[in-house]
Length: 402
Ligand SMILES: Cc1cc2nc3c(=O)[nH]c(=O)nc-3n(C[C@H](O)[C@H](O)[C@H](O)COP(=O)(O)OP(=O)(O)OC[C@H]3O[C@@H](n4cnc5c(N)ncnc54)[C@H](O)[C@@H]3O)c2cc1C
Image (cartoon, rainbow, N blue to C red; front, side, top):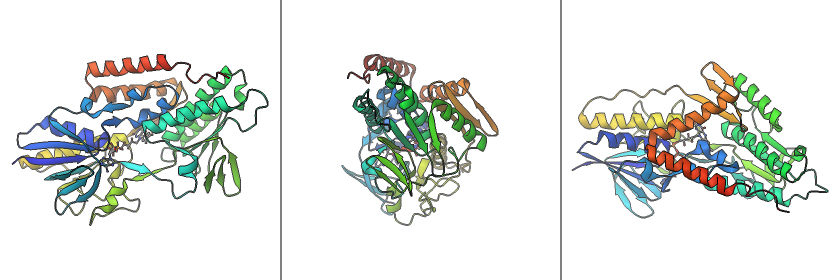
């Protein structure tokens, strides 16, 4: 009987594990990847879809990134029973010998009223396209004369890398659109709001300082120490402080996938991540591995860590099957390249910080390098060609017609 390895989650960690396990291509194991989506979403590129890029460039069919000897199943997992070694999903029940859980994170609204009703969330290609449409509607709905002061007020909530990328891109894009209506770009007001004392709070202070300056130069109003109490139809409220808003984007936080909470006997950390041992096994189960955002490891929450975890877990399972003791898990060095607007950016690599156009291009290079690792050259070329055609086809789509 072949050893049945099931991976749940078709994101960074799950796909990386499947690709590596498939490469070992041992005769005595079979690899199945179950995901609730038929495609992989490249989250780091989502912000570009809001303003210009094609959704095709960040939503890649799973069959394009997984080798043929991985069985791909589109299903939604509801229950995991580690005692019976079985997974109950929408369409089927699956049995496993080794289980890799790579379920990622989900939105955390911290119970703040109005987040789901009055803000746009930002976690998928669909979300990015909705925000793109909302920006378009905003421009079309604002009159050219007698303009109310708050007509172009946008608030991006959350000063992490995603919020920074998004605020920088939105302000540049919105200003371009407004200028085309013949109105001064000064009417555009994009706010970036964070609860902490500085944006990019997880990175060195120097990086926050540079990013703040660059965003302000672009026209973004950076507001720190704003603890939001509610979001209404036309404002973001923090106690007595009110920021008028016609468009609110929530990029304020994530939490581990809630499915982890339903798995019996798992030990969860304070922030809901799964406590794992030195081989990324979910304590107390020896045949259940948790990787990526859901694992309580020092650097989880980053795509880079998810990729490392995927490779590592494949190594552990492979070693286990051939009877060799695996190496212990070590988190890897991580770097951050954050684009700001359409030409600028900031990079943080250990103690090194630099910024400017080189940082912007470095980020593009990282994206390119990632795709070239997972896609064949013809598929890469197809992807970029489709993206180019999309941009050409949609050029001027949002230009005001009134
Ligand atoms: C907008 C955005 C921008 C980001 N930018 C960066 C960046 O620039 N750099 C960086 O390092 N990190 C970035 N991150 C974080 C990074 O994307 C995550 O750390 C990474 O995706 C984690 O990988 P994962 O495999 O754990 O989870 P994911 O990539 O989220 O994959 C989880 C998968 O599980 C599937 N799934 C979930 N529940 C079920 C279920 N019940 N049944 C079946 N399938 C299920 C999901 O559909 C998904 O395919 C960003 C995240 C976001 C949201």
